[in-house]
Length: 311
Image (tube, rainbow, N blue to C red; front, side, top):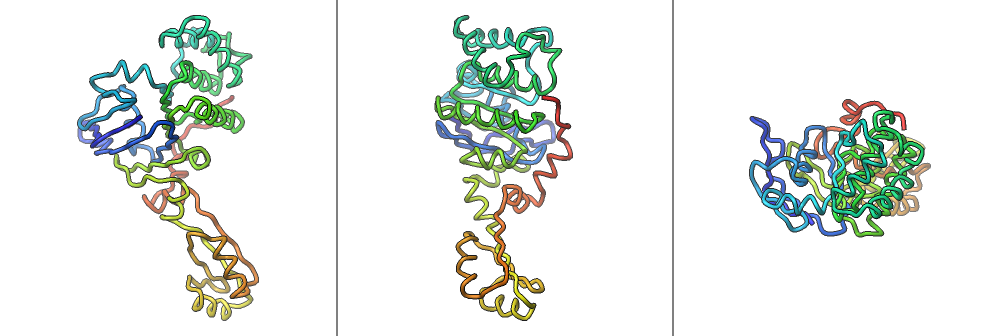
């Protein structure tokens, strides 16, 4: 569904995207992670034909993003970070108009609009002017507009930013169901690491415009961080003996060991070393990001992300 080779975008002296090679198979759900300014959104905008690349090549759904823009746009949905609905229009009318723009007949567009209104909890506000909706309601309307034509490839740029936890969970459920029922290929950017960890089968980490990691969440965590097994002992002397036997780092009466399978190691050491306590700490994608870039994606999101809007 997506093939890029040395995809590059320069803005004057800034290399926003610097030679990205990305391949996404049909039906995959891929999450792009990176700090603000890493090149995630710029990459999505090139793949969705909104801006041209400076150099390199990209095909989406089998079509060149520069020479065959119309064919690309007919096959994708794109939900950007801004609001896309006209402020003076009613939400339902905007959905129907969006469906008509994709060639849907009026009855089909109305039926699909009703389905999305119900799914995303917009029933009470669908007939109101967009200007009267809260920030969270507008965000859900934008999402519905991107899904109206049930695209075979869906781009989501920070789709759940500004949604409260309940609506964020509803959106995630709808995305997963869309993929299961229609085989939709999905590429999303997000600062919610739990979202990427639970939904994506591949995580691509971008920093300074380049891809620095690309694997499943599980393998990224095992390869770059690993589980931490913390063994507690009655005394520092016992901990020292255990550290010499099993390896690891002694900290007072504790021994800390990194492993790619913490639970199995903990079970083995429990019998051989007889610690008084055992704790296994599983890594997160933020741990992976911190290891790869020296920064926390969670902290980066906190500095620039707007406050939660009313849903």
